[in-house]
Image (tube, rainbow, N blue to C red; front, side, top):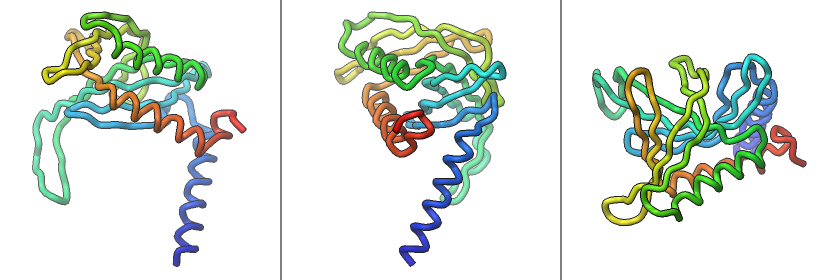
Length: 188
């Protein structure tokens, strides 16, 4: 029984790896994900229509507008998702350098700010026009620091708070994905 399960798992992973190598343009390939209170964070790769490839840090804000019903089996609602995606780089080395820059911000003084280039996400999981997000180091209520990302969403200003533990988790998951799929990243 264990052998059958292992064969099934290996087959599924091999199929996913083959599919990941041939991703179409305009499609996000999630690499790492983490959830916070009303916020979803992810690292993903994206290929534009012109063939430009890059890694992004997705900073999403989910607002549950109208929960229809909720129980142990199902959960449905009308959601409003605002997301900005920070450009990490075109290579894994550039992406890790940008992630390290973000981690270094937690050691800076409160109210230190930095701007990051990125893009807004559209409702169809595609990336829209280039945008800029301002990151400000903020003090937590009970001590420690967190980062506040400010970005324009439509005609309004949106904000997302990012804790250091989430960044470290995403970084670790990104490294683990590279070790699991080295050929996909051009590693040996």
